[in-house]
Image 1 (cartoon, rainbow, N blue to C red):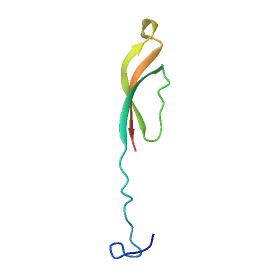
Image 2 (cartoon, rainbow, N blue to C red):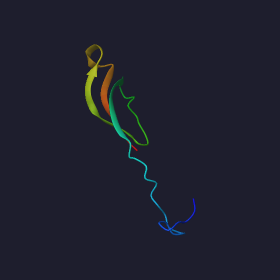
Image 3 (tube, rainbow, N blue to C red):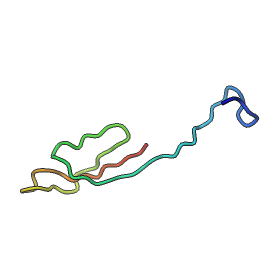
Length: 64
């Protein structure tokens, strides 16, 4: 895209992309809640399975 009267040559313009956010809750195997990038995992909400020892429930969030 070339220069125009509203954007002179050599200037930069923000892309104007939206910030995408969201979250979900999932029951995952104990110790297997690793995430990377724009994802985060909160603290354990609950434990499930026999004697509450098989899996944990986490809230996962996305902010990109």
